[in-house]
Amino acid sequence: MRVHFHGAAGEVTGSLHEVEAAGRRLLLDCGLIQGSPEAERRNHESFPFDPAALDALVISHAHIDHIGRVPLLVRRGFKGPIYAQQATAELMPVMLLDAASIQEGDAERANRHRRQGEPEVLALYTREDVQAAMKQVRTLPYDQRSEVLPGIDICFREAGHILGSSSVEVWADGRKLVFSGDLGPKGTPILRDPAIIDRADLVLMESTYGDRLHRDRVETIRELGTILDTAWNEGGNVLIPAFAVGRSQELLYWFARHWEEWQLARWQIFLDSPMAAKVVDIYDRNADLFDEDARRVWQDKPNPFRLPNLHITASREESMAINRIERGAIVIAGSGMANAGRILHHFRHRLDRRQTHVVFVGYQAEGTLGRRLVDGASWARIHGSDVRVNAQRHTVGGLSAHTDQRGLMEWYGAIEGHPPLALVHGEDKAREALAGEIGERYGVQAVLARPGMVLEV
Image (cartoon, rainbow, N blue to C red; front, side, top):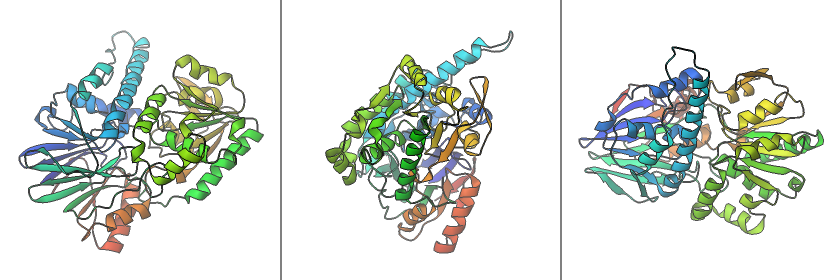
């Protein structure tokens, strides 16, 4: 069994790992590269393999940095099955159609400003490409070992990151590979904890927060309540860039759980996303995947997805109308890294106001507007205009959907015999710190995967 590393090897986005075994080729994830314009242009490059030569694709979860190039893969010749956990398969078309819509809109805007003689800008893929790709999706439940190709079995195990997120066990050639996918922290609201893996011959593990420990969740939630109270007293609005799947639902969970304590009835809450209603419906249909705490909140508190002052804004006109509200609005909008989507529309109108509070609740990749704002940028260029940043900024790290260094080490440490380990999906600073801690505790020298690297097991 050989593993070829192509993406998310030295960076956090663009997950792409190829497994060669039993005379077949299996791809783990096919994610979009996100970040700076230079980084995102790499999405248009040729894949480092022939898509038509692949036999199957396995998806760990439905975040766009893990599925965002699937339609492109199919358009360029991949004809095999795409395996995903049931909830992941339901989320994929929602996420990918939104991504295609954004890319088509970006291409249209670029072509309007195209100079004479410059080539036409093309979208990475279209909504028709998404529909074609979804015809190849096959669903598998958690905890069921299944043969997906002759001589190759896989099993999805709960990863606790978003609904449907999975670690993937792969058996072939008498060996076992484990791909962590993205791992969530223990005790994440709504989701069950990551499953314990018993054994492996090689582990590919994410390392997004390999160099830090998250704040205590109780302290984090207390801080969020304080931010909301301060913003109300200052007469402002709260803007929260958040991923449409995972973080948005968790925020609504906490709003329901602390409804009375945070006096949330005085606010207008907007989930400003054209795909939000669809995602909420998918969560409702997969409530059997929720943990016990979530079930209790659903029974004893206002339904998080149907708060009495919650507005799910689908149309562009509804979204634009939010900016007429001078105070008392909480706006949750994508994208989570503020590099696209409706949050940019709200930033353009509100970042210059001191009474605006911007709350970052997730990872901000290098090169994104979110990262620049977290790092203290005084100006932001949005839709061709420069906007002064006077808004108050808050980074609420304890809400991350990724586990921290301690959680990563505990998950790996539970695998019998502490097998060989390759670190993926992390910037070098995080990977180097995690590799050092793992080496000291378990005596294992972790490999820092690089694009083009091959490991044999």
